[in-house]
Every structure is written in C-alpha cells, then in structure tokens.
Image (tube, rainbow, N blue to C red; front, side, top):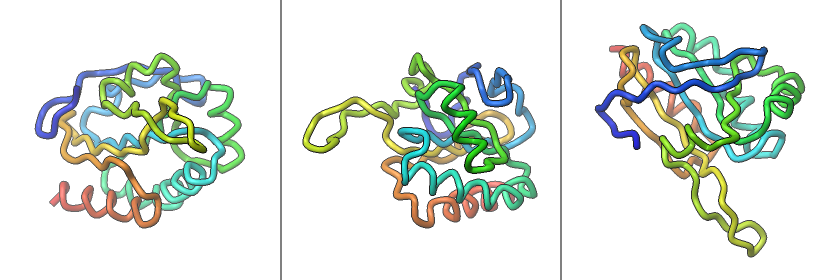
Length: 155
C-alpha cells in the first residue's frame, strides 16, 4: 500500500502506443498517476480532456501524466485516439496497480453494489516518493488542483 512521504514501489504495465511503462522510466520527473473507472464514460472523458488540455503546463513543471483503468489496451487505444489524448493510458486488467494504490472500492451503480475504481489521483515526485493523493475525486477543477500541487512541489 502506498503512503505519503514514502517511495512508491516500481510497477510495470502495458500502455498505449504498444509500450510497457514502469515508474522507473520517469526517474527525475514528477508523475501524476490518475485512476479512473472506465474508458469513454462522461466523467472519465471530461477528466482526460482536462489533463490533455493542461498537459503543456504539466510538461513545463517537469511532470508526466499517466491515466490508469482496468480497461484493455484496445479500449484505451480507441479512447485515446477519439479524445486526442497526448499522454499514455495504462491497462491494469489484473488490478495490481489498483491494489497497490488501494483504489478498488465497492460502489453503488443503479442500486447494485459493484467493485470498481474510485476516481483517485496521486502525485509522485522526481525521486519516486508519493507527495500527495486525492481520493473520491470530483472532476470539476481537479486538474487545476493537481497543477497547483505540482507547482508547490517544484518550489
């Protein structure tokens, strides 16, 4: 389980663009790791678009954006292409990373209890240490909050 102020254990997952991405690939850069429930759903689309539109600001802050859900790479590729996302999406079909970050929760969907990803974002610094986490994220203004945290981290 991750803990603020502690180094995040390295992970390796398949990603869009026919890549395998690990946290260690980004040593020396901050990483925004955001978990979202499902490709091509309204809230997840808006959140991804907000990160896409702010990517230049994150890049200027030496920060990489990575989206994570349990969807397949094929689903991710379609979602990324349709929305013109300029960052990679990681496929965590085995829930390994989801479990490491404790984002799988019981949720109510139309009166039914289902296991799913609780929308969450994590800020990992350039040395691989978890600096901040947002759980039960509300999409509106979230990306600006994360960007402010990145700027504060870099001061």
